[in-house]
Length: 165
Image 1 (cartoon, one colour):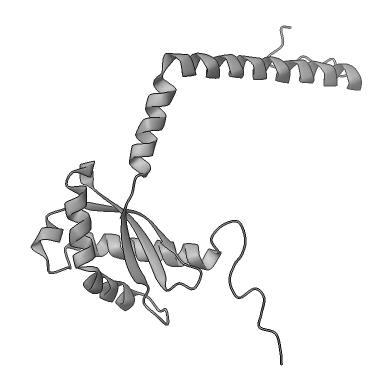
Image 2 (image 1 turned 60 degrees about the vertical axis):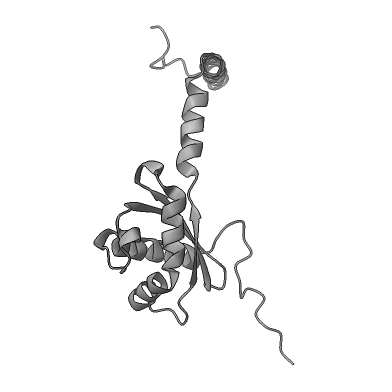
């Protein structure tokens, strides 16, 4: 009895190229469908929804769709409307794609924007900025010292752009 291919599913550190490609195609398709208002649900169509990312499972049978309504307002309401219309949205995705199976769509709120805001606030903090600037100054000094050491070792006495002439 022969062995099944050991590489049937990608086991690397991240998603396979096929997963990425399928996820992006689903993302574009859902974005277009939602933008055009193709779903017959006035509750869903009153929301302007951003589809930030779609992650496809290794077998491409499940797609996790990360969404956020414009401005983040009524996020739970928009998510409920998407979940209520999953079947119709899946139908639209299936029509656009040439996969053997249309993936099950699972909608989740995209918290990337919240994390970006938290990161911006953190970098705006005076203490953090002071630490970063101190680290940058140290790194610049180390780079300059390494360049000077290399010039002495190689006998290169050509002045660099950042050296006084």
